Image (cartoon, rainbow, N blue to C red):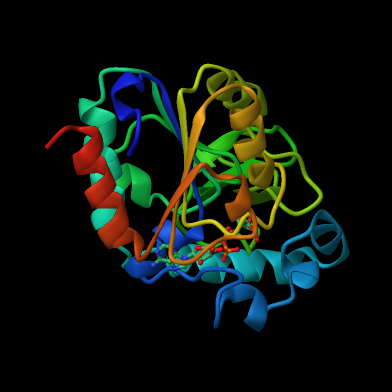
Length: 236
Ligand code: APR
């Protein structure tokens, strides 16, 4: 990529496409989750208020489907880049799986939360959680049966936005991997990055809704395109 030698600080946004080849559902590509479930019924703050049991069972199903999933070559390449990159580095993921961490990445922010965490709506404590929430287990901290998925629902504020905007302000390179650019605020980060003077690169199976905002793009499966790009960045 042109001008890569003067890159110091990298911010990477990832979406469901980076986990697709690990067997985790995407949302809007053919056969995706929102073709099989209506997000209005199972993924909004209103749905949780209207029928908490239905939403809790939906997230139990999604959390359970993570049990046998492994990081793929894209997750591992990003873990290697995190370990070896000398400058600033941050992965902002929209994904609620833990495959970036299992792939070796350490500097990861989950702006839409995480499946393996339960949030207590009574005492607001967070607990590592792998089992069911639909059977309303007691909160380990306060005992109330008020646990919910620690996942950002449509209509709720994404997490870590201050840290994300601070990272974008310092970025020399913004890379978007495996996301359709359909959901804000994540879909707007590329414009923020451009306005702040960063180079922008899209690595995606095919052009996303926001492709025209990127200075550069490479299209193909993440397990091919991402390791190749990481090797270039590390000068290998
Ligand atoms: N390699 C690279 N990219 C891929 C691959 C792959 N193997 N498979 C699919 N993609 C790309 C698709 O082309 C698409 O652009 O990944 C993107 C997936 O888009 P979505 O399914 O919309 O997922 P995402 O962009 O992460 O959705 C954003 O929407 O529903 C909410 O909270 C949910 O975090 C999610 C957010």
